[in-house]
Image (cartoon, rainbow, N blue to C red; front, side):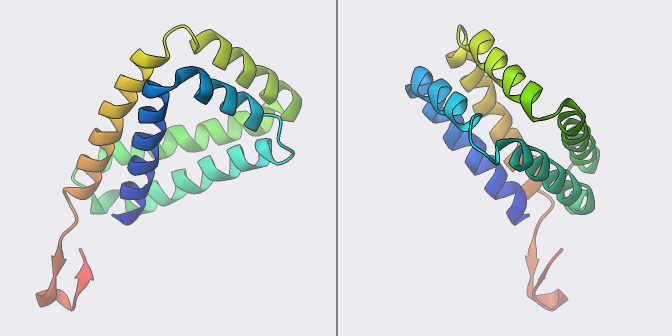
Length: 136
């Protein structure tokens, strides 16, 4: 599933950057939280990924995992929408400050999770010319 590959690659690159330069990544996240469309982007991206993961879960090696991730992403999107932009920025800043003490450990966990996401998402995808050249 191309979507899973893109999401896991993005997550992997972000975690590697956090592993190498944790303060710079934390600073970038804080700066991003003050952008005009930050709140809308966070809600829309999570909701869209959640919906796409839900509808493509059956094409993976572990559909239950992707259904769970889809539900989690959509629940976070709803929670952020209910939170509102002002409180969302405050919570984002508090989270970055709270997690600033352990960024490298979180980066290592993120790298493992990105690999797991890619592995489970790509294991069920095969390309077969016998089936008309479609992904199954």
